[in-house]
Image 1 (cartoon, rainbow, N blue to C red):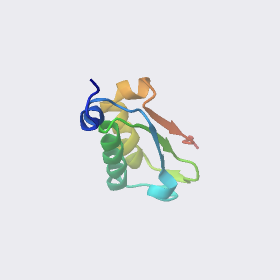
Image 2: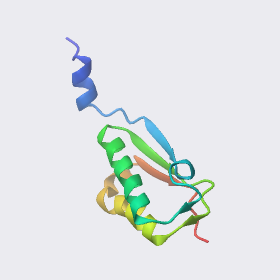
Image 3: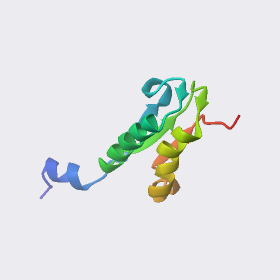
Length: 96
C-alpha cells in the first residue's frame, strides 16, 4: 500500500537542486552580515525542505569577509556534511 503524498513529502528528501544567484538575491556587492544571514537562512530553509542548493556568485564583483562568514562560512561550519555530500555547492567565487 503506497504512502499518502503528505507523508512522502514530509519524510523523504527530494534532493532537487535550487540554484540561487547571489547577483539577483543581493546584487553585485555582497558586503553585509545582514545579507549574509539572509542567504544563510534561505539555504537552511531549502535544505530542511529536502533540496540541495547551488550558490552562484557569477556577476558578483565584491564579496567581503563579513558577508562570506555570515553566509557560506557559517554553512561550512554548521553543515559540513552537506558540503561533503555535494548538497551545497558554491560556484564562481574567486579570490582576487
